[in-house]
Length: 94
Image (cartoon, rainbow, N blue to C red; front, side, top):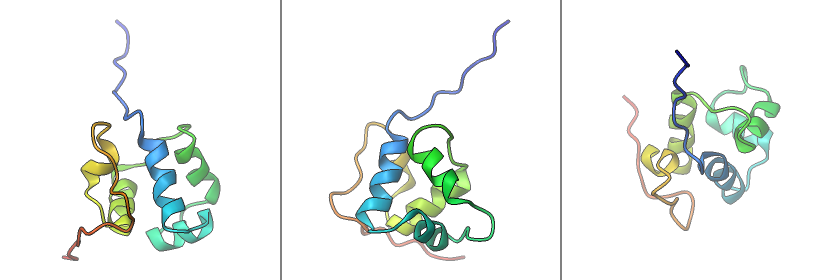
């Protein structure tokens, strides 16, 4: 029996790159702003932006918080990112 392949968002890599570019951040700056400077290499950002790897849910949430957009805007291929970033979503810290 063959392994099931989990569906992946087609536009995810483009949206992640768009977030970084629209916020005017280098890969190094993005890592710092996401809060992963101790555990993430800039090469990983490149892999996310070229569809070589898919970020974890926690990483996607960090992107959403940084860009101030709904997580759904990032992962749902049927939705676009807002025309201006950062967006207007305010995340509360618990």
